[in-house]
Length: 148
Image (cartoon, rainbow, N blue to C red; front, side, top):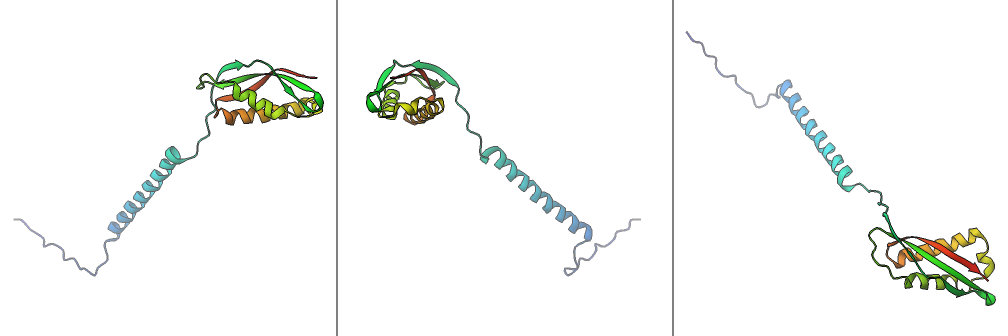
C-alpha cells in the first residue's frame, strides 16, 4: 500500500524559510566579493601606473672639439661625446654643437672654473640635448674642456 502525502500549501504572506534566506544572502555576498576582487585585479594588472622603463645605453658618438667665445675675450675649447640610447640611429651632432654654443657663449670664464658650476652647465646641456634629440641622447660627456 502506498501512501501519498498532499503537497504543502504555501502561504504567499509567509516569510521564506530561514535556511533559504541565508543561502540567498550568502550567494549575493559571494557575488559582490567576486566582483570587487575582479575589479581590483583588473586595476592592478591593467590600469595601475607603472614606472617608466630606463632606456638601454647604445653607441657613444664623439664630436670634434669646437671653440666658443666667452666673455671678455676669453674662449672655451670643448669636445663632446653623446651617449645614445639603444634605439637611436645615426644622430646628427650639429644640434649638440649648436646647444653647446648657445649655452656657453658669453659666459664669464670664472663661472666655468669650479667643478660644481661646470657640472651645472653640463646638466643644462644634457637637458637641452635630451629635448632636442627627443630622448635619443641619454648622457653627454666632456671629452675636452679648456678655457683661456
